[in-house]
Image 1 (spheres, rainbow, N blue to C red):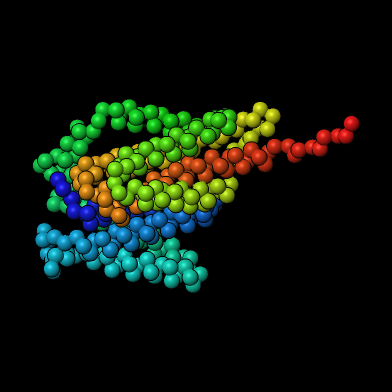
Image 2 (cartoon, rainbow, N blue to C red):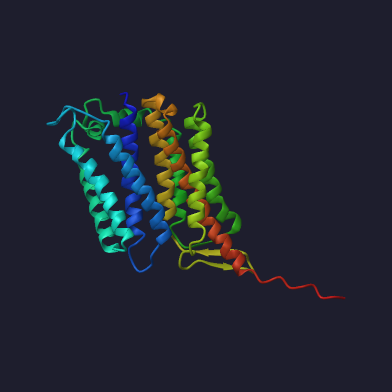
Length: 310
C-alpha cells in the first residue's frame, strides 16, 4: 500500500509525540526533578505535536461526516495549536501549575484519546490491525530473519543494564559506541543513496550534540560510585537503557517499513531530517550517559602531586 508523504509525516510525528510525551511529564514527577531532561523532551514533544497538527491539514477524507474533506477529528488541529500557545503563555507568566495542567490534558486528549480512535477500522492504523489484507502479518513475514536475533541480542543487552553491576571504563564505553554505530548504520542504510544524505547526517550530528550537551552535565544516578584504585564503576540497575535500545530498534524497523512501502520518502526533506535528528537524539543520550560517568571518574582521581626535587 502506497502512502502519501503527508500521511507518513503525520504518522511519524504522532508516534514520536506519543513516545516522548511521557518522558517529558515523568521528568517533572517525584522528589527528584530532572529539568534538563524535561526541557529537552518537552521541546521535542511540542515540535512533534506541531508537525502532527499542521500535517493533518493536508490529510482529507470522506469516510466521516465532513466539509470539503475536513471531518470532526480535524478540530484537534486548532485545539492543539491553541493549547500549545496557551501553555507557553502560562509558562512565561510563571504559572507552572496551569502550564503543567494544559500539557497533561493535551497529551491525554490529543495523543491517548485520539490515538485510540486511530485503531478503528477505516483509519490507517486500524487498517493495519483489522484490514482484510492483514498488512501487519505481511510486514512481519517479509522482515528478514536476521532482524529477530538482533532484537533478542539488544534485549539481552538492555536486561544486563537493569541490575546492579560493576564495570570498567571500557565496558562503560561499549554501550554508547555500539548504539552510535547502530544509529549511524540505520541512517546510512535508509538514506545512503538519497541526495539528502548530507543534510540527514547534519541533522544527526545536531541531534546528538544537543542531547550530549543536555545529558552530560546531569548528576549520575543515585548509587553510582567509582573506585579510583581499581578503576571500576559501581552502577545501579536502570531500565532507561532498555527503553532507549528498544526505541532505537523500533525507529530503524519503522523507517525500514515506511521506505519499503514508499521508497520516494527517502527524498522527502522533512521526513529524512526528522529521522536523522531522531537517530542523533538517541546517540547523544547514550554518549551523554557515558560522559557523566567519565566525569565522575575524573572527579574521583587523586590530584597530581609534584615530583620532589632530588
